[in-house]
Length: 219
Length: 354
Image: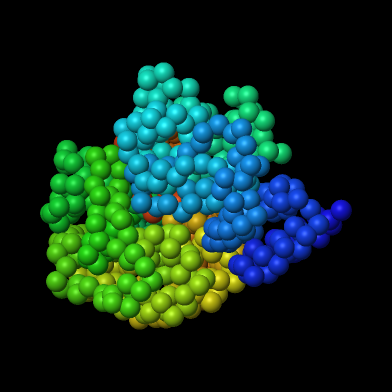
C-alpha cells in the first residue's frame, strides 16, 4: 500500500514550486504501487483541494493554482487519457464557458481542476448569452459551469438561466469568479444552482450538484 | 474641537502626512456614472474629453467627494497599443481579444507613441480642462496600468502567468517595453495637470502571485518605475490582497495603497501606519444591493478601523464603482462619511462595530 500522506506532501511541494519534473517523478512512484484512478483520488484531488483552500486563506496565489492545475491536468491526461474507461464514467454532460469577458484564467483553472479530477467536460470558451443557451440545448448539457470576472457578466447569468428554464432545460448552473467571491449572495440573485469560492471547490460542488441529479461522484 | 474646513487637497495632503485633517477624505472613484449624469451611453460619454470633464464636475458637485478621477477605462492603454476595446451599455469597457498571441510576438512589439494615440490625447485633454476648472482645490487623480499588470490585457491572464514562469527572456523584454510606456504615460498626465498617479498593479497582489514571485518581479519593477514618475503615486491592487507584501510596497516609493474588502483595515493599519496611507475598502460588488443602513455601517466600520491618526482615505476596494451602484447609496456614503468622518474621531473609542 502506498504512503499517500508522504506522496501528497511531496506532490504539493512540487506543484507550489511549479516543478513539472518533480511532480511527474512523484506521480510515477505512486503509480508504480497503486492503480491510476486511486492515485488521482488519493493524491491529485486532495492536493488540488488543499491548494485551493490555501488560496481562500490567502496563503497561496492564483498563479500557483493555475500552474498546479495545468501540471495536474497534463499528468492525469498521461495516466487517464481521454477516452479511458474510468475517466468521466457515467457522468452527465458538462460544459464550461466564460460569459462575454476575454479573461479566461478562472475558466482554465476550473477546467484543469475538473479534468485532473477525472471528469470530462466541454470547453465552450468565450460566449454570449444567446450563443451559450443555444449550445447548451444543442449539446444536451446537464451541468453548466460559468466563469465571470466583471459584475456585469455575472449579472448576465440571470438571463442565461431564465432562457434555459424558458426552453424547458433543467441544466444545473454553477457559477464562479471574482464578483461571486466578493458578494456571497450574488449566485442566488442570478438564479444559479451552486457556486464555489475557489476553483478547486469546483470538484466538490460539481459532485454535489451531480449528486442532486442522481449521479454518483468519483469520491 | 472641530477643525476649520479644509479644501479637498488640504484634507488629502494632511492625511498623507499621517496627521488628522478636518475629516477623513472620501474618494468616490466614479467613472461610468458620469454618463448617467449626462444622460448618454457609456461609449458616447468616453468619446469626448468634454463629456468626462462635465461628468466629473457634476459628480463632485452631487457627492462632494475629495477627488477628480480622470480614469476613462482600463483598456484605454490597450487601445493605444493597437488592441480592441469592447463597450457595453451597463458596465465598464473591456479589453477584447489579446493582441500578443504568442511569446514571439513580444520580440516584434514596440510601445505606442503617446502623442500619436488619440485615445490617450483625449485623456490628457480632459486632465488639462479639469485642472483649469478646479485648480488646486481638489486633487486630480490620473491612472496608469503597471508594467507588471498590463500584460493581463495584452496577452491574457493564463498566457501571462505561463510567460512569467517559463519564458524569462520574453518576460523581461515585455517589462522593459511596458516600463517605458508607463513612465511616459504617467509623466504626460502629470504635465497635463494631474496631481498624482494611481498605479494599478493587481498582479502584484498576493491574491495573484506568491510573495516570493512578487519580490523578484512586481516589487523590483514598481521600484524602478515609480522612481521615474515625476509626481506622487498611489498603488492600487484592485481588490487583491496585500498584507503579506505591505512592508515591501511601502519601499517602492508609493504614498498610498488601495486595499481589498477581503482584508481587515485594522490589521493593515498596524503595518501601514506612518508609512502608507490606506485607500479603501468599501465592497463595491455588495454596494449595488446595500440598504442605507448597510451603507452607513460600512462607512462607520471603515472609519473606525483606519481613520484614527490620519493616513486613511475612504473609498471602494476596487478603484472603480460599478455602474449598478445607485445614486441613493452613493449619497448615503457621502453623507455618512461627513457625519462620522470628522476629526477627532472620539466616537470610535467606544465603537464595537456593526
